[in-house]
Length: 236
Ligand code: ADP
Ligand code: MG
Image (cartoon, rainbow, N blue to C red; front, side):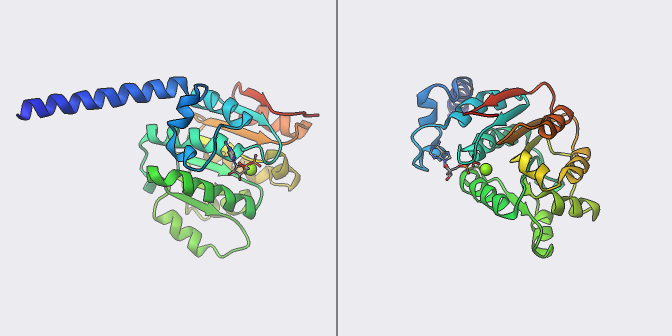
């Protein structure tokens, strides 16, 4: 009986593994893989947005991306879902620091990203901490101390917390610069560069921007390695 149970268990494991591999291979261009992604399907979305459909296969291959797309194009899930899969493969200990780091220009945007990460990451039991200025640090530090898989942060506050030595970024291997052009407009470039120095160079970096001026190109050239460029809509 024990032998049969073991055999049955192994069969189930294999079929799950094969299903998962096929899923990742065909993902997301095969329409049925979108339907099989229950977390997204349950949100009532019938299909990926163009930025999602283009970002996912590239991000899942582990390549760097620079994506130029307007607000409202669905960028957040464009980088969060491959980020979740990246996390699942890493098996890092959240107590030792985050694996996924998202930098965002404002508190409002950071909070929205965190809400989306909590909503879609809940079923995978992923933890997410949001760090932003203009609020006391105590709660944010307490959340960090509990251990976290994902950190969503504005560059100023994260840099403060790094200087206090209250967070370690040595496990970060999936780095997202969201609304990079806005972060540069707000003068966050020195903080961004300091933060990135704390992140290992062996990482995947994804940069999202609405415009493509010289300064953004420069920081992309410095921080990304051989990125795939994705353009959605008209860009000057
Ligand atoms: P961006 O960061 O590009 O401005 P968001 O990621 O904030 O865009 O997404 C804009 C809105 O579109 C959000 O309310 C989000 O829930 C919704 N959304 C995201 N993906 C899809 C999808 N595949 N289908 C329909 N709506 C989506
Ligand atoms: Mg956004």
